[in-house]
Length: 112
Length: 114
Image 1 (tube, chains in turn cyan, green):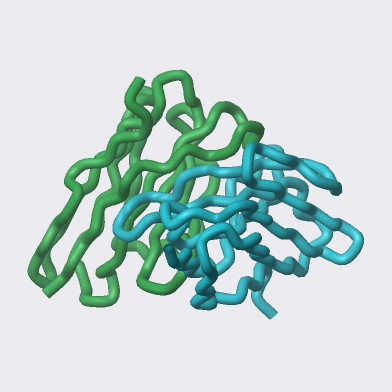
Image 2 (cartoon, chains in turn green, purple):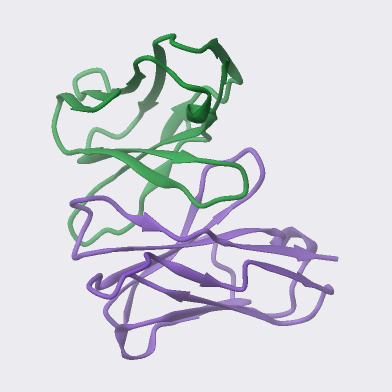
């Protein structure tokens, strides 16, 4: 079992739709969770970062972490064509361990 | 500050040649990370530095790979005797003392070994 599982998609939605992206992880020792957006041939761009279970909102984006079920989600409201990208979840142990562990990424396409 | 800068953006090299990449992190960040990403995969951790000390190396990092961060500022990643399997995007990221606030990535160096 991989440490972080993410459905690679592709996922195609119409403009304005609510998008739900999900990951599961296997190690309950993971302490923090991030979502990155990556456009083609670019580096990942940090969207959301959280330490705790619960929801964190930033504009049209909401990150949700459920540590009891080892499940993390990213919701995008009122999706736009500019949201078309690959979305990567990532997690790590924290402290002196610098290793961020990424999912494979989900490729999202928002159609006008 | 313009973020994390990587150079070159693209590199094509012949199998067996050595290549070196450079990363300039965000100036106030004391941690610097190298990742490798192949098509359709998420980034894979290679190594990281806190200041000038290399604190962690992945088992993926063969003896042909070496990284340095002299004086705790910029870093270089060298690959010796390149192989076709080394073709990938090499990403650098930086953060300030741990993960709070996330890691900031550069745009990467795309390596093609022919």
